[in-house]
Image (cartoon, rainbow, N blue to C red; front, side, top):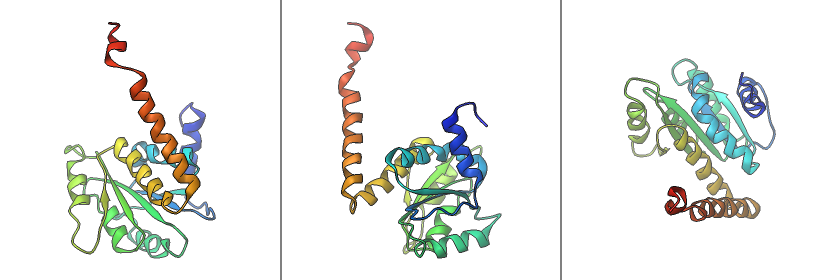
Length: 186
């Protein structure tokens, strides 16, 4: 575990795979524990926005029965969006989408010598009828997956929409507050 208390809290959230939170809106699943290094970018944003979520390891290849039961129960448990991170063959997002009508957002993770391109193509090339929204490879993709999930939830949650608008305005202000000229001291 990291010395950073926030990292410890996030890591403990992953470790507690039996935790049954109520009113969970977003499921964050990944193919292995090592994928959490990337998916924590999504978890941190969901936490920042106060979106209830759960974090689980659900491997398409090593725990297919768990994947099927998680996907089949997702809508009935009230999940509104599932973020699925996977590397290599990256079957988790597509198989999850095949087992639920809850929208699935796939996050390719660089786990092989192909640096995530294999995962990106696997997630993006879904057959007609089994959609998976596909993000960029790595932590930026995980963060954007969380932001897309938040935007989806914000369509029916005015308070969350206000938080998202404020968050985006703050990002804009960060860019406008520092110019290249300021940075080079001209």
